[in-house]
Picture 1 (cartoon, rainbow, N blue to C red):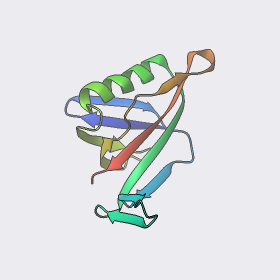
Picture 2 (picture 1 turned 90 degrees about the vertical axis):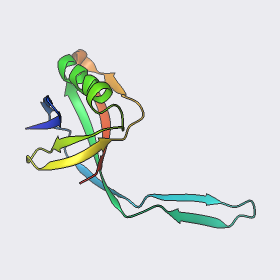
Picture 3 (picture 1 turned 45 degrees about the vertical axis):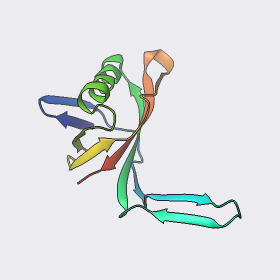
Length: 120
């Protein structure tokens, strides 16, 4: 199985993330305490869906294509793009990670995580 990322004319296909896939909800709340110890919670909008993808055994080419897509097409979190999940469902997402942090493992294969915020 594969997944796709599409932005304008750029279309990359890579191996599906490691199962199980995680769909996470984010309530977008800021939390903190006052100097007196009172808990403060500020709501910043509606609940948002977040996809957390864990990749293992990516080839050099797959990792390099993802890195190029992150820097050039997605421009970090600046641009939205289309994400096609392993079942070919399309979502408009934003890549929310501050770093492209993929680590080399055995036999020159790469592993890393990706957090996508659903903008659909």
